Length: 247
Image (cartoon, rainbow, N blue to C red; front, top):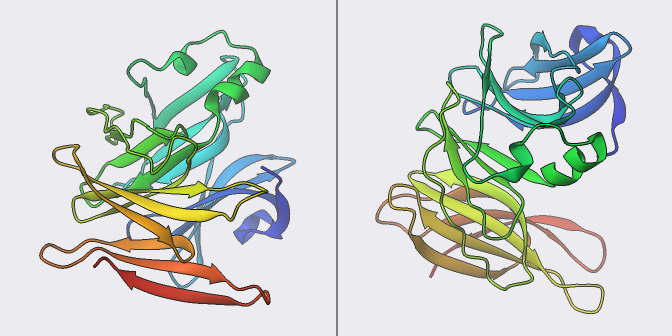
């Protein structure tokens, strides 16, 4: 990912990397300076709160999520281990390794180039149950629930809308997981889809699409239709937020 420059809290000017929202709406940003790598935290109003140093030898952060407990799930490449690393860094600074079942990319000894390739595109989404749901970006998943102690639960297989669909995001709401996809090519229009699964059973319950924009938010409430908030672009380069409910 190409990183821009910005002033981050008391870091001064830094290269801005991945960002994440915690369950309370606070913003966390990876910042890199000549002095090191940090996760910089801001409250919901945008006021600087704190920073946590992460040694790049431990992991160069490419994706992360924030647990309700304040711990971080961090994915990236380990300069020390010469491979991909997926781990939980506790609020106190301790590390818990995360090994996904059947994941060959978690094996050590990969070259830096192969480690980046093995990581691919990954997605992490915190949930009200205190866990983070994580998937390496294959269309069918699986999506694994990971606890703040690094324990991995049973994976949830995803159901893409088409064999050529690309996974582009994960959203969690009230016991349901919405996996969002993009389909299309240079020759055909791009479309967005949402495939919904039940977190308790792992069963696929609904497929929505094509949707009129990129999915930003998902809301599931028992007894009511699923609801999505999307960002839509028009042919005249204008943007609009679109709210849609399942029929």
